[in-house]
Length: 162
Image 1 (cartoon, helix red, strand yellow):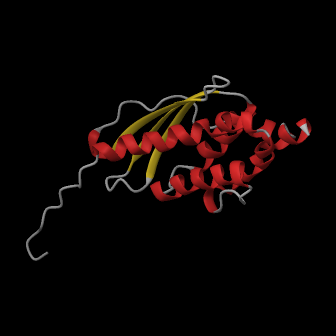
Image 2 (tube, rainbow, N blue to C red; image 1 turned 120 degrees about the vertical axis):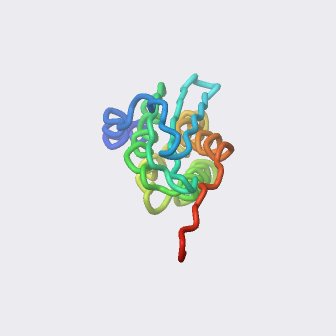
C-alpha cells in the first residue's frame, strides 16, 4: 500500500513544483494581494501562499508558494501551482471542498481545472497524512480570503455619452 501512496506520479509532481517563492510587493492597480499560511500540526508541513486577485476579486492573476512539506503536500502544491493562475475564486474553494470530501468521505475528488489532485486519492486511506496533503490548498484559501477582505470595487468613471 505504501507504493500507492508514494507512486511515481506523486513523486514526479513533488519534484517539479512550479511557482516556488513569494510574490513581490504589487503595484496597487494590478489587483488585490493576499497571503495565507497553514501548518499541519501533526507533521509540521507548512505552506505560505501569495495570491493576486484581479480588480474584481474573482480570478487569480498571480500566485507563488513557499511549501515545506512531505512529498504528498508538495505534490498537491505542484498541481495547485500548475493550474491556479486563471482560476476563479469559486473554483479554488470548490477544489478544496472536493479534495476534503475525497480524503475524508470517499468522494470522487476535484473536477475541472484541478482534476490532477485526484492523483492523491490513495492518501484517503491514511488519515494522518490528510493535513499535510491539504496544507497548500488550505493556505491558498486563506490567501484568497485575505485578499478579498481588502477588496474595494474599482471606480468606473462614466464618460460623455456612456
